Amino acid sequence: MQLKILYFARLREELGVAAEEFAGEAANVAALASALAARGGKWRALADERRLRVAVNQDMASASTPLKAGDEVAFFPPVTGG
Amino acid sequence: MIRVQHEDFDLSTEVKRLTEGNAKIGAVASFVGLVRDANDGKSVAGMTLEHYPGMTEKALNAIAVEAKGRWDLIDLTIVHRVGELKPQDQIVLVAVASAHRGEAFAACEFIMDYLKTQAPFWKKEAGGEGVHWVEARDSDDKAADRWKGVT
Image (cartoon, rainbow over all chains, first blue to last red):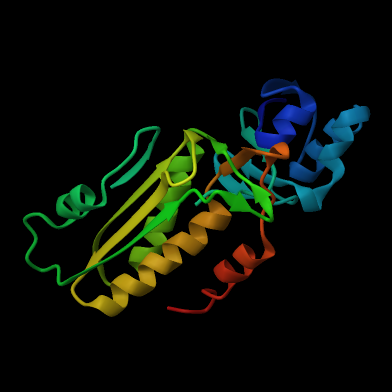
């Protein structure tokens, strides 16, 4: 399935990627994060759940949130606005 | 009204816009956040505020809906700036209008606490010790958590 993945803030800088189209199987957020972390090197940052937050289709989500084709998934550090 | 913008804002203009023509409003509570010149012991000469266009507006709307569900509010305004900011610049405005003060005070604080942990903004500070991303604070999570179960 196809997913749109976005990265923000420190994570975007560490990965050197702001957005990508992902083609592969990922039943939920945890499976997607594992698939990305399996790229190795700097991508291992995706395995560190405590340092990351995730949104699916622009709503805050969790590791167990299910994914379907066409979803927009965003990974980012804990937010620091206000 | 919810806005995410680069431009500065004016508190009195926003309060006037919020209350104009509505004589049911008896109270407006507002909060304005400013950029400090130091954070976590490091000097701050400036900062860049990044956000997630689309989700930011959606998250702020959801916080406003949640506040309106918890308290009897007449209207509210949230303005959050993005882009390059320097010390003393205004970052965020929350203004809440209600019939009586109690609801306005509580909802204003609730909105700020939730915004701090739920709205996708990230601060990158520049100062004497270089450039770094601001770390989220546990105290912000605790501030948001204390509203759980409060109606």
